[in-house]
Image 1 (spheres, rainbow, N blue to C red):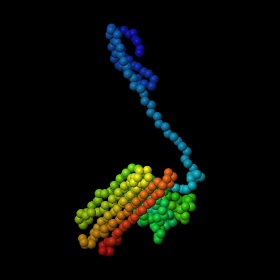
Image 2 (cartoon, one colour):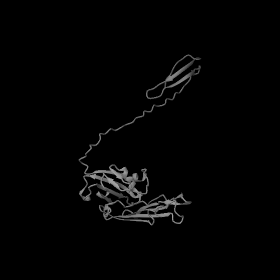
Image 3 (cartoon, rainbow, N blue to C red):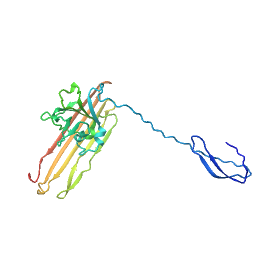
Image 4 (tube, one colour):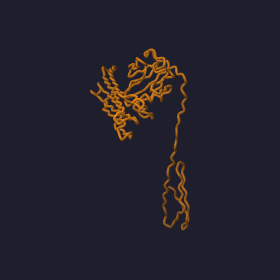
Amino acid sequence: MCALTVPTGSHYRARVEKENFYATEVPDLHFDQTGNVFEFTLARQREVREVVDVQESLPTIDPELTTAQEQISGVDVINLPYPTTRDYRNVLNYIPQVINDIYYQPHITGAETYQTLVVFDGFNVTQPANGQLLLRVSTDSFRTVNVETSRVSAEYGKSSGGVLELNTASGDDHFRFVATDFVPSVQDVNGIALDKITPRLTVSGPISKGHLWFYNAFDGEYDNVIIKGLPSDADHDVVWRGGNLLKLQGNLSQRNLITSSFNVNYAHDQHAGLSVQDP
């Protein structure tokens, strides 16, 4: 509140200022003989701050870290852009020190695939005949993918190239449902025909809340390969593939869990290598 005594019949310009407020200016004020009351509204200034925490980088060798490990999460497996997203082996290229060859086989730190131990939910799934990674599982089912390149624990035995750990999710006390790629594609090769369909279906939830849970992940593939230059009744190569992961997990006690997993893969390609030169 401020009182001023000024001559009447004149025009005045008013400017009001206060710290931490924007100034207000009125270019024309007119006072008459009766007493005038004017109100001015000031807008408060807003201060914008940004706080940046600068932390030192961790040393190259951390003595408290027992293994040299790289990891990507199940969310990364789903969201990262890579070709043929129905095959998780293609996302392994995003892990440092891992390179895939043309046959989708991973090479850790330059080692051959058979020199790498592949562990799926704690089980050794390395192909015993040739050491190849042939296991297939739905890409929607992963929790983490870990790669250990050095200082590997003795529990993994002989794995000169490193260890590739594939860890899948488990059920909980909420029912969950995920369906992916159920719409087929078509192709125009020697006429309109079905091209492929690659459905994935994941269902999980409780069997007995707080005690027993299930997790089931199905993935399938149907490919209709049409070869130009062959007769219409002999130009198709139909490829079928399917896989299913079923997990059960239960509480034995407050400190003990038991998990059972069953994974099955099936593939059928009756006319593999079909071509004009090999009809």
